[in-house]
Length: 534
Picture 1 (cartoon, rainbow, N blue to C red):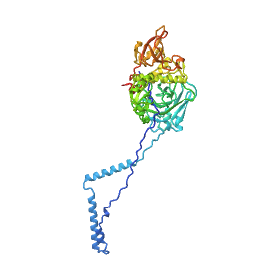
Picture 2 (cartoon, rainbow, N blue to C red):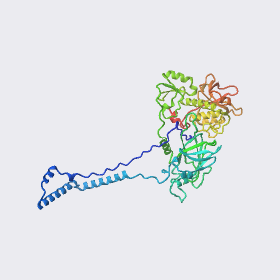
Picture 3 (spheres, rainbow, N blue to C red):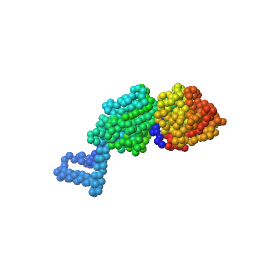
Picture 4 (cartoon, rainbow, N blue to C red):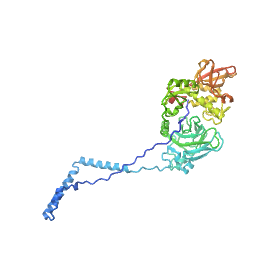
């Protein structure tokens, strides 16, 4: 079972790489020896009165001085072959060190200095025009953040063309492979491509590739991943990293990269929509790709201002890198009073944390609390935005632009945001196959109403022909006497109501069929290691 490659960076993460430049150490000119100047005051004084010298005296003086100088120089020179060799080596090492320290750094002759790390923010106009072309319903445009794809009208299949071979040609790379190929590596050497993107609306990102002898993108030769969209519930939009990974089942990923790749994005485009690409990285494998992503993230967002000591009843976003940034609200002086307050609003997913951002109390399991929190967020959002009941052409967990929802789409949306992202891409799971999907995810099946708990996915109203359920909702509290709070988008009136609502779980025309309890595992939940492993 394949999980979607979603890399959500909650909050606005810094995308700047930190580089360090090393300057050479300036060399110091050698100082001349003062041995020759080492004349004593007595010698100067004794020579001063004598203005005339005989030839014998002069010769004696000169000879004596010369012999002394020779003797002094002889004492300073190496006397053995080993000493001479050591001195020669030291001089050689010194010269080499001086050369290394003073040699200037060599700049890359190419407009893309590292061919495997493409920063689109650095492209000049000519390189940009050689690399990206207008496609269906969208056109590329340069901006400070990289390159943006702009919607030209409504479309379910917008795309932009990426002329990868021409890009490297324009960047100055030499030709190879019979005068046709400018890409300095092969698909076999780079099996993973990472895109750093930002989008107003979520959707599908599909890369049609042209490799081997194919000169342009071809149906059947593509990779598809899902990306998230706007961040209505968490503030500003965020950068995401999409990983396309070729494996043994990827056909035709060999020999060379050609023009033109085709980048299809979103599945519900409107005029003026912007899809932003900042960087592209070619990697040997997934390990290298993940290392690139971690390095590119840079430092996490600054921690929040220190909180007042105490206990906070909060929804706790748990996606932010500093725990205290997840905490909001007013502090309770005692844990007991905070717990009492939390239990009164537990159907919304509240829990208690201290001023350090450490969760100290949850009325349910962490997964249950997160499911209830997402139920609260989505139902309030849909009501405020005027969503209508009906079949949506997109999975609302990925793209809710159509403003359509229903009983099954609400459940899909809640589960998706809680980390269960391996869902059908286009419409999501409809009620007739949602219970099959729950079983495939490894959720626990519940057959008795008395065993139901908050966060359970409840199926009711069996079809007369096959007994399959026709309606679904999520419980917001444990069952009590056959009644429980629920999050339900089964009609326009329910969408516009204040939720959760208290209703019987099973009644005359909509009897209980069964339920499934979400269970997070490493295989089915993208947040498992960060949130649910313990």
